[in-house]
Amino acid sequence: MTHPFEIEQETTLPASPEQVWAAIATGPGIESWFMGRHEVEPREGGTAAMDIGGNTEESVVTAYEPGKRFATRTATGEDGRFMAFEYLIEGRDGGSTVLRMVHSGVLGDDWQDEYDALRRGWPFHLHTLREYLTHFPGRTGVPVFAMTHTGERFSQQDHAALTRALALPAEAPIGARVHIEPPGLPPLDGEVTWSDNQRIEVRTGDGLYTFHHLPGAVLLFHHLFRTDAQGAETAWQQWLTSLLTERS
Image 1 (cartoon, rainbow, N blue to C red):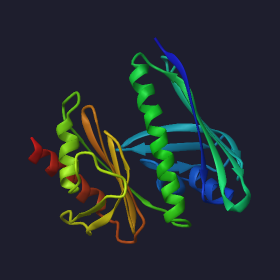
Image 2: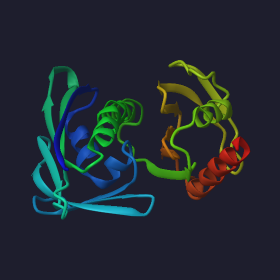
Image 3: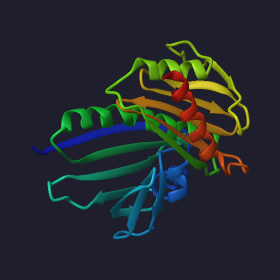
Image 4: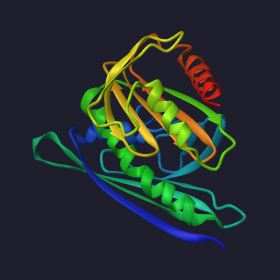
């Protein structure tokens, strides 16, 4: 049985409406804080495409009002499922902007687990958007995605393996320093900006790095703001595979 849902979030961002628009309504902007690779055709009725790990989903741009409102909607599947996103932008005095986000649609039979994952994910993604606009304004990031299936329903060992690899305690505190030297990559030297029982985000001088474990898989989705990012995705995939092989 399908189930309709709606998630609404609001956040104040330290950026102008024009900067927020560029971050939520252009491909390079979205790639700088949200997971995956993105393309946006800049017009109402245009196509917006998201690619995560080779899986591409397309939607139609249903609203395109630069600096004010951006919305997309996927096609309705045979089972009635679809996803819709709406962003409303409102400038405030002092150069800040209020962003209202509404994610709605229809979920499938396992809607409760999927809804919970979406509800838990949006505060994190909006936090990453704020980190991007605060620390990397005017720049666009190179997205990096890596994933390894664990074949398990859920494992605290995955979380422990990640925190150990980052030289962090099991409950990594916000502000904790991280320094690792992944093979084939520049040293990662930064601080924890987000930490819960599924995600750890680290901000460095040249990127936002997310380490995420969930039932059955461990994901990395990073945003690199440097010129030598070529080959980083392959190296991070090798790092993740090696980490979980050693864990098992």
